[in-house]
Length: 217
Length: 217
DNA sequence: TTCTGATTCAAACGTATGTTTGAATTCTAA
DNA sequence: TTAGAATTCAAACATACGTTTGAATCAGAA
Image (cartoon, rainbow over all chains, first blue to last red; front, side):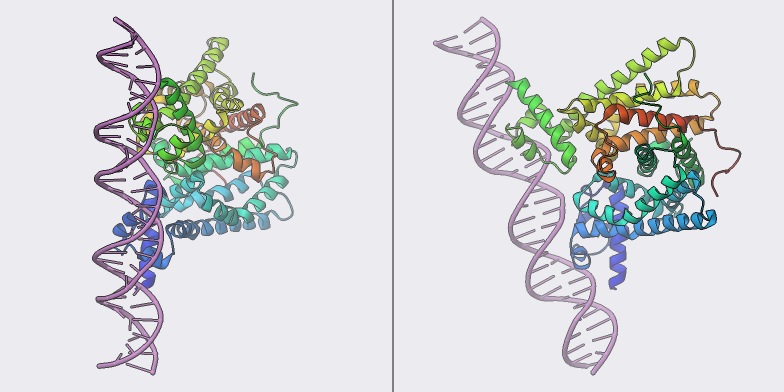
């Protein structure tokens, strides 16, 4: 059956890509683990590159749709007023981290997403921009309204830092659990999201730079 | 001359590793760009793996020594009292980000460091633990004293998020500059550090979770 | 059943990689 | 200057990879 083979390849590729990275996993390893023929990848996808893209897009599109849906809900609830910062961050973090509640593929993909972001493969850069364009615009606009006192530059920096905190957590669930002896465990999803929202919101709500260069030391 | 060849290989490898990742760059590319013979790598380092390790350790050891020196200075200045949170974060961020002031190798290595952290190559994991063991211990102790009211779990999460913000910035200097049309530019080092310290300190100083599960929504 | 298109399969192709080899060359010290 | 070690070099080795090929097999409609 055709469709079954294609999905089998996608699932197995996603699993192995998480564990070993794009360059670390070969088509032979994928097809062998999926119990399909080596040539099936090229028959169904065209190339390894296209397979990697397909693995990524299949899930990230759903996550970003959910993020935008959460933004929509929050905005219609807020009427004409600005959104609370923590609601925006919740919309940003929750769908990605929550995906880990799917015990089968979720946790794998959570790490894969961070991994893709880190690998910076050229052909993934375009996919990134396309899949994130609308979301980034919506997020920036929401933050702008939520923190109108903040200089644009400072606001962008803080969004960037918050994305970093999230990406780090997505990419790294094993390491943080190990280094804290299980105290911090990203598989406890709601707890993780709550801590992340608290941290990022407090960071975003901090007072801006006082004058020129006024930092520590 | 022996030493010159070895350093030439290290420098060139660092440069190319940043641009193309560990698996993306071949020994042939490195040795050709360095204008040395292919076999020199194995003569001086033993293997590609050992070369990669050497590239990493050469700089990260210096950065972590500087971090600990900053902690020492802050602690002797503070006497018996706890350190301000922003001083701890400054000690954590500044040496890594400041390395980018070296216009020759600095910026490259800043990205390489984040890249290594993301790649999670098995043989790098051991190097990471060794090179960071002392620093992590010192940092955790300093934060514990600086925020005694904070539950251990919450404290560890926040340190983790702050590390994420830093790693993201280190790994990503091109992307953030591009996405903000130059507004946020990690090559403006002090400005970057200041923004990062403000963000992380505010996140660390946020009030802890109020009761069970009390977050957004 | 028979035919046609879709799918699977084993095998091979061409290329790039990390590594090794052994001779040639350069440096160092007596 | 010269013996001996250190270093460089061109060439080859073995392997793994993504991709292609063409025949074999399967599915479903006539």
